[in-house]
Length: 105
Image (tube, rainbow, N blue to C red; front, side):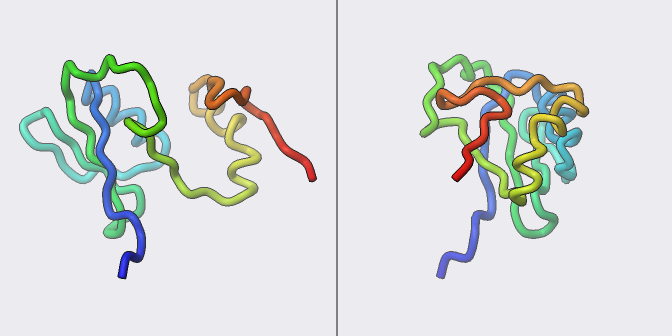
C-alpha cells in the first residue's frame, strides 16, 4: 500500500533563509502560508518538504527529530562534499563521520 514518502516537515528559525537554502539545493518552491509555512517540492507532484518558522528550534539534536535524507545516486553521494562546497556550504561531521568519509570493501 505505501509507495513512498509524500512529505516531511522541519522547524526553522528563519523561513526566507531556509527557503533560499533548499532552493539552492535544487528543491522547487511551491507556496507559503502567512509567512510562517512554506512548501518546496523534493520531486515535483510526488514529495515535498514543509518548513515551519518557529522559535522552538533550539532542541538538542537527535536523528529521530528534524532528520530527513534525500535519495541520491551512488555517484552523487561520492561527489556530495564537492557539490555542497560548490554551492557555498561547508559540510560538517555527522554521526561520527567526517565529510568525505568513504568505505571501501
